[in-house]
Amino acid sequence: SIAPTVRTADVAICEMETPLAPAQGPFSGWPDFSAPPQVLTALKAVGYRTCTTASNHSLDQGYDGVKRTLDELDAAGLKHTGSARTAAEAARTLLITLANGVRVAQLAYSFDFNGIAMPADKPWLANLTDVSTILAAAHRAKLAGADIVVLSMHWGTEYDHLATQTQRDQAAQLLASPDIDVILGDHAHVVQPMQKINGKWVIY
Image 1 (cartoon, rainbow, N blue to C red):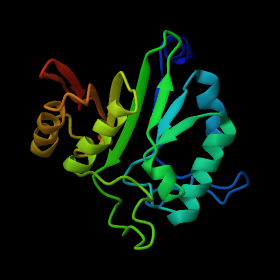
Image 2: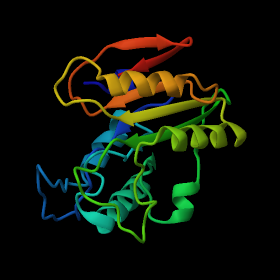
Image 3: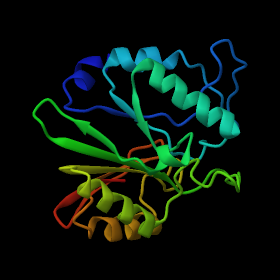
Image 4: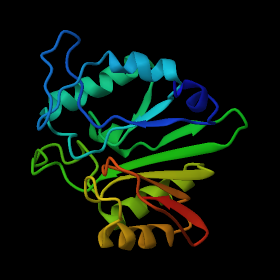
């Protein structure tokens, strides 16, 4: 079981890559996911406290899927960032206060949504990677009182053990900022390298 390891973390972050279906389904797999919400019971029991929701599958089930996923996360008592039900929610910084009083801000962005276009009337629905946008969000997080800003990036090439040039370039740009303290990479589904840039870690 991973629970003993997860539970010892000051804050354990999961990546909720797939939209969640209604409790009774229908459920679907690749390419347009709709996953059982019962998975959240297990995530909570294992010790996760918060989840990122920005991935290439964020928009698989459209606005309804995003809303349902975030509603289910709320019901399970799991915090979240990376997609939003409203513009106001998208603009809020997720701040988590640890037991020792340290405040951690969590940001999450995805390189793409598998070609699904963002709804024109909901440009805030999920976070699309843009370096200047991320830097601005990280600065807002520090102004909001974050001691540490954790950035999750859905990026790279699936099943490739090496970081792409785009990943390396973006990591260098992002970690040049005093407002970003660590980058956690998603998407590849295999182990990629870790690298220290400007004294800070990127786990590709």
